Image (cartoon, rainbow, N blue to C red):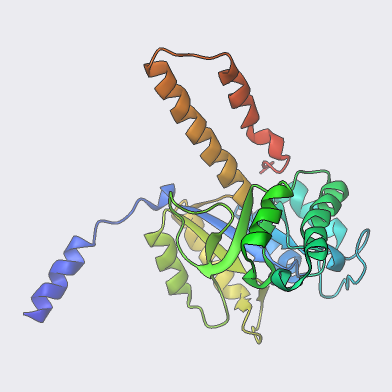
Length: 279
Ligand SMILES: [Zn+2]
């Protein structure tokens, strides 16, 4: 009897999802050099992209105070990934502090100034913020919003759906020990999956590291199933376009068409991100 029940459950859930409609967002925190060495070549190979959270003080080269080229990405490496893989640059603050433990002036500086630094270094708008350690409270969220960010990724497991707070986007983290099968399952079960990675290396030792071989297998599997990648900014602008399109169609249906509609459409022009993708 249990066996019968089991096979019934299996048959019920065997309706395979259409994976070619699924979207994966790779968010990679801290700007380690391994992103350039191991992630970037694989992204290029499959014409995929990612959102990279940079700590501006650690960025080696111009603007970088503590940057160590052996450990962290350089300005030139980020520039190259921006130009040829359409990556999104997100702010992960100036120095990666616990934001809720700072006084208001210091917290604001970490949030606002890092945006300014990245925008002037790379000449693209920075609309995504990543909370260091996922540490945040209401004050932090208000500052992030006031600084002009449209999105912020948290550090907490969860799924992306219609009700997600854009300033508390949850993730699915890939750590040492996270099985490739578990990641594939998450992608299969979620039309939009936001994945969090730190370092991708040949031999993981730290708990925040994930093996290159698994990453290569994951991308190959995604390509085979025609699963696409987006940056968080691209996702945001697509979502905005969808909302505006729906609004306009409702207005059309009611016979009320405003001149300001064309302005609305202009405002969601994806090219305004500057990170929209040359892939
Ligand atoms: Zn971090």
